[in-house]
Image (cartoon, rainbow, N blue to C red; front, side, top):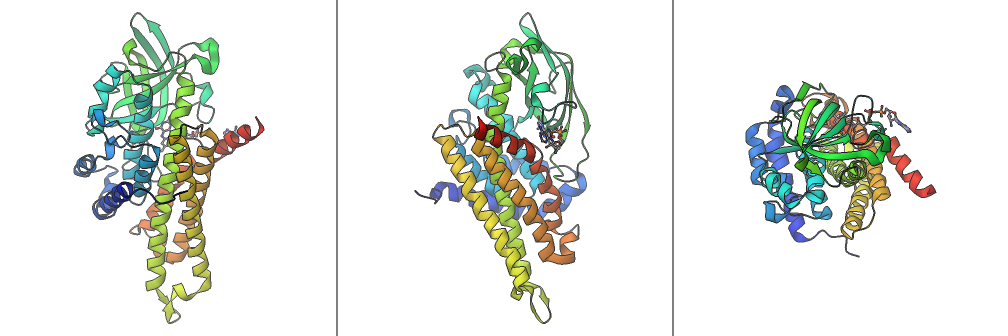
Length: 380
Ligand SMILES: Cc1cc2nc3c(=O)[nH]c(=O)nc-3n(C[C@H](O)[C@H](O)[C@H](O)COP(=O)(O)OP(=O)(O)OC[C@H]3O[C@@H](n4cnc5c(N)ncnc54)[C@H](O)[C@@H]3O)c2cc1C
């Protein structure tokens, strides 16, 4: 067994980490104040190839396997989580379905622009009445000639306000339950009948915009059906499984950054005439944070490796996501504690991580849903 990442992936991580810490963190106040990701930073991210991480080389991407992608996500997780969220929603759940299921024509049409960052992507499953219970979605896609007519509402859709392409899951045969759903490629800003609702006002992850997507007799060409008709639910679960490994990796990166910040603070902040790092209570918090980083990293690496061997990782992806995101919440809390009052202040990155990280236990399946998936598999 070799636990060392290959040197090219370590170099990629170093490049992304440097970009996130030197370029993006320097603009964090601007992103927080405007709730927008600066266009010039997106262009820099595009030049680094971050929008094409999961896209095959023939379409202009980096063609990384799961291990490579997740190594990149871990580095991405070290910086502003909103900025990282825009890229990962695109590169992970936004792009995953098309890369895996798209026809050569669909790929040629969209993937080059997605790899260059010209066309951002998102994934639309959740609806106001259907969150954890994804099998109960109501958005309907009715076949009419060589089009499908979509009606319904999706909400909390990441990147929707800026996305050029959404993978939308809709009901194509209401009598067949989860075997009557299909996936569609929808250009939300270029399809009559599709509108984007008000941008959500969120607790954190500023700059990562999400919104409702409303379909009113929206005609989508039949050529935009992604994968086989009526298999959209299964495909959606596959997209989410891959996404969960990525979230585990991002959470690991965020924890590593919080640990670095905490170690630096503990070594420089003095109380009672000495650095607070001398106090065992503080040392124990740092040690627990390190345990969380190390265990989460080993887990996502194992799941990524299994996925690249072609194994079914549904249960293990949930194990990794649950472990890393729950650990991150505790680590973020400990980082605030080590920093004391400073960790509660708006100009501290720790305060921002504390708010931003909370989302990771909710989207792409809550922690409870991860436990449900694990338990169901154990008992099957
Ligand atoms: C900022 C943000 C961005 C998002 N981006 C996207 C996106 O890009 N695309 C997309 O499709 N969706 C997206 N989502 C939606 C996200 O995946 C859902 O919010 C999530 O799946 C939970 O659904 P819900 O919010 O409806 O909560 P609910 O399903 O109502 O859950 C509420 C609570 O009940 C618990 N619960 C529900 N059912 C069970 C059960 N059977 N057993 C035990 N506990 C249960 C949950 O764990 C949770 O604690 C996003 C959400 C947010 C907040």
